[in-house]
Each structure stands twice: as C-alpha cells, then as structure tokens.
Length: 562
Image (cartoon, rainbow, N blue to C red):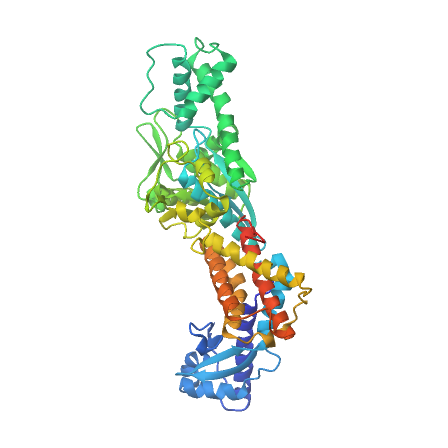
C-alpha cells in the first residue's frame, strides 16, 4: 500500500532537517528549535513537484531573511538516492523540489506490483464502521431518493473499505410504529372492499396499486375467512402476509442495483427484545427527562437540540424517537461499532442534533455518530423535469428507473456530486454512448487500453514487466502529468473516506480518463522505439489497472471492448 506522494513529502522533511543540522554544526545558523513547516504540492508545476515554506517559518528563529535561509539550506541539500533530481529557491524563499526519473518509475511500478490493491490505504485500520442507508419504508416501493441513497451509501461503504476500515452495510426495517398501523388500515380496507359495499378508503391511507394487489392476493389464498374476524386479527393477518413480500421485493430491487446488506435489522427486534423499554429507563437515569401532563420528555435542548422532545406520550406509547435512540445505542454500545453513519434525506436535518443529544445523555460520544445529508434529485429528460415512467405512466421508482437506464450509469451518476448537493440526473445522457456521458467516457478509456494491448499481441508484441528504470523513456509533459496524478490515488481515497464523499472517486476516474486520452493523442505507443513503446505500455497498464480498481470498487462494469 505504497503512497509515494506521502513518502516523497516525508523525504523532503528529512532532507531539509539534515541540511539545517549541518548548517548548525558548521556554525552558519544558531542552534534553535526548528518550527513546524509545511511540504505541499504547488498549484503550478513550474514551482516544482514539492515545495516547502521552511525558510519562511524559520525567519524569526534565525533572525534572518527567508531568502537568505533558503539559499543556505540549498548549499547543504543532499539529493543522492532520493526521489528528487533537483531543488531550487524561488520567490521570497520557497524551496522547490523536482521529482527524479526514479520517483516516476516507482509510481508506475507500484501500480503494477500492487494490482487490484493499488489505492488501498490503512487510514481506518482497526476501526469498525456501520453504514446504514436506504432503510426505505417497507409499506411500499422505493422512490428516486432511495435510488440516490443506495448508490451513495453502498459506494461510501466501499470507499471506507478501501481506506482500511472494517465496514458493515445495514438496512433498518421500520416494521413497527405508525406507518405499519397505516399499512394495516390500508390493507384491511382494500380487503373488506372486496366483500362489502360502501367502505371508504381513509384519506391518509396508502392508496397505491400495490395495496390493492396485496388484498386481492390475500383473498385468493384466504377467501372471506377474515371478513367477520376481529379487526386486530384481520389487520395482523394481512400485515403478516404483505410485509414480508414487500421486504423481499426491497431486497430483490436493491440486489439488482448491486447492493447487498450484511444485515436487515428490524425495528420489531428492539420492541420485542426489551431494548425500547430499557432505553427509556436509561434516559430517566441520566437526569435528562421530565414529566408534563402525563408525557415523558427529553431535555434535548440542554444538549444542542432546538427544543425538548417527547419520549412517551400521555397514553403510554413511546414516540418513534425512542426506538431510533435504541437502534443507535445498539449500534454503538451493544454491537460496539466505532462509528455509525446514517445516509439521510434532506428533510432529516433536525434529526441530527436530537439523536446526538440522546447519545450524549446515554454516555456515548456523539462524535461516533455521523449523518450524511442527501439532497433531492431532479430527473431531466429532453431538457425538462421528468417524473413519470414511460412504461407505466406512474412516478419513477428505483425498479422502473433501472428499466430505463443502465445500472452502471445509475451508480456512477448518483455519485457525481457530493451528497449534500442538489443533482439533476439527465436520463438522456445516462443512456448515450458518447464522451459526454462520464461513465461511458471512463469505461471507454479502459476498453481503449485493452484494445491497444490486443492489437499489439496480434502482431506478436508483448508488454514487458515494468521496471522503475524504464521511466527515463517517459519524459513528455503528458506522461509526467499522468504519472503524478496516478500517485495521488491513495490520498484521494483517504480524502473521500474522511469527507464521506464518494463523488471524489468518480471525479478522479473521469480525470484520469481525460488525462489518458490526452496522453494517447500526443504520445504514440506503436511506432516508437522498443524502449519507448514498452515504457508507454507500462504506463497504459497502470492506468488500466487504476480505472478497473475504481469501477470495481463502485460495482460498475469494466468492459474490455466497446
């Protein structure tokens, strides 16, 4: 898991520290404590590949102008055996370092040596993370927001895995509470309507066609057996029939979307196992509750929430907030995950402070609970907002979306922007086979490289194993720029994991494809000398491996021909 950007940066610090020590030993500088200094990648490549501000931060300590300090340091710098070919002083005293052929060669060689592991980091080594996402209401099909949440959650989990975390994916099934009672009412009404006249569907019930179908299918199996039964018995029988079917359909649809969960956690487990009642008692013991008019309240306003929250209503029934607290306590305390991440819709902003307040009251560090807020998606077709499926004429669900566009496009497009940004999903672009389609563009770069290797093999030319020394034949600006970008992948993985933003990975994929196409248009592979051809084949192979690693991580196909 080499990170040659990090290694080179650390090497600059060692080189500078040795030079300063030598200057002190020679009496050219006073023996003082050296302040912390930075090593950065300059925005402009003319200012080197690595640059340090050491002379600036040392000016006060040495009581000397930064430029004079930098000039002195330069006289003692020893680059022998390092990743740098030269260094120079610029401006007011920046010291700029330029990579040697050795560094460029090691980058390409590392990719080829590490293969599918290239880009993996150990940032999260020894830490466990539970990513909960989608968790759609099981009383109906998944909508377009769930489609974005699924892609973001699954790809974020994959990024965290690549950054070294132990990751589990989870779907929280709300199979208890008000929405299930409404589900039962809807099913009961549709069932009774099959046998009795004049039964009206409540306005706030679920009016979808799926409820009608459940009632009809239940009637085909059970006939009128439950028409005269006790209402609660009838409602429960209908729910016991329909809910597992809905959950199974959720699992199937998400499976088509290439999402597999480690666990489907049911809310009913918390009620049945006593966890909900236990959380109420723990909150009472915390001192952060009080009673008013027969209801139990949580003093969440004392812990960062905008107001206090009801825990148990006057009728003794807990609010939905209590099982949610019990669920997060289960994640962080019972199951001992280091961090729990929830992917939530834009309407859940207020949920964050109240849940963190609950964790704090329970003695759990609220920083261990993170929420990723996901904004709405607008579907665009023919330049206009689009809400209906061409197949059914109804609102687009996850299932119908995947019938209209490729799964590759769905997973890639939903991760093109950071989660908290609004996103216009262009359905026409998603199915187009042009360079304007970002996923097609990245896949085409991979297929193009495969085609290069195939064409040469048909002529009897085989790529040699890449060695670091071959980098002396990779001298053009396009080649060097591409190699430097290849070296940043481990850093991008870490940045993506820290920010909980898989879009950093799709942007990297598009950028490396762009840089490869630019390199290929300027640098011939075939028709050059054997040494240059083999070096460029090595570079092509490294790009191919990286594109495959990213697309595999995002569960997007990686075609070898297009």
